[in-house]
Amino acid sequence: MSSPQLSDVPTALLALIVEEAARRLSTQLTSAVPVPEPTPERPEARPLALTVEQAAKRLGIGRTRMFALVRSGQVQSITIGRLRRIPEEALNEYVNARLNATSTTLSAA
Image (cartoon, rainbow, N blue to C red; front, side, top):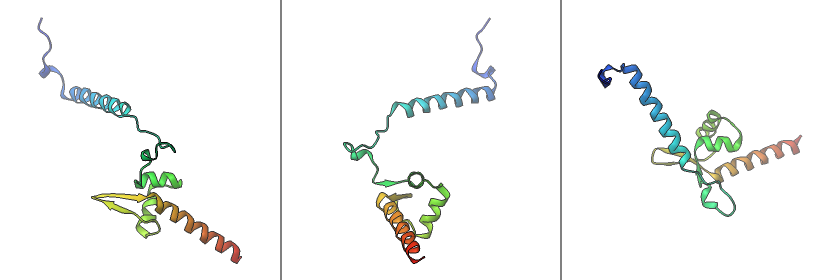
């Protein structure tokens, strides 16, 4: 009795095997490279400019809302090549502007 040949394996099964192998390899590569957490002792681990998703997470809002704030100019952003990044200072400026607007509104009432 001869061993099975690669041509005997259905294409769909081969695709599933390759997909599973790629998923496992991706998981191993991702988990093998630890991302250092920013600490006062390691300020270099904290990014200078954030992705839109990271900035949205910092503010506790959704990605779509963050893009709307960037598009309207309420939050400043920069482009690096084709990438959009939001400097940390831009988030601080936005929050401070919102605080000032809120306190002005409250004191006028």
